[in-house]
Image (cartoon, rainbow, N blue to C red; front, side, top):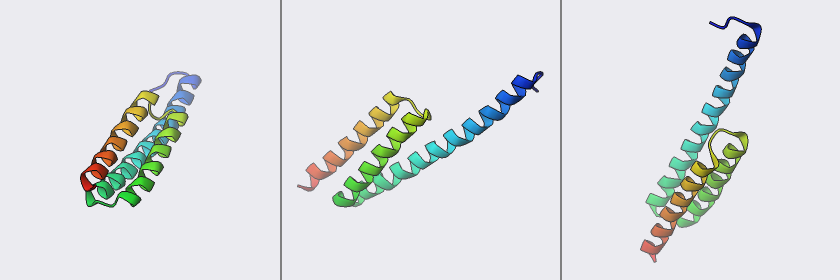
Length: 91
């Protein structure tokens, strides 16, 4: 339990930030799963559009402070590699 008014305020603030971060990260995971489903289904055109959306979502999450820049860069890179591998396999 917080003992001071400022500690009470920090508890409220932390709860708001946690909720925002949790929603953002959940949205990222959903977009990533959708993208991976399209890649595995062999739909390259739709997967390219989904990759663009996922990449943008990662950028926005970094900007908002929900995830670190290095994490987002690594995830974007690996998602792009998956698409490239799928396109190479198909060709």
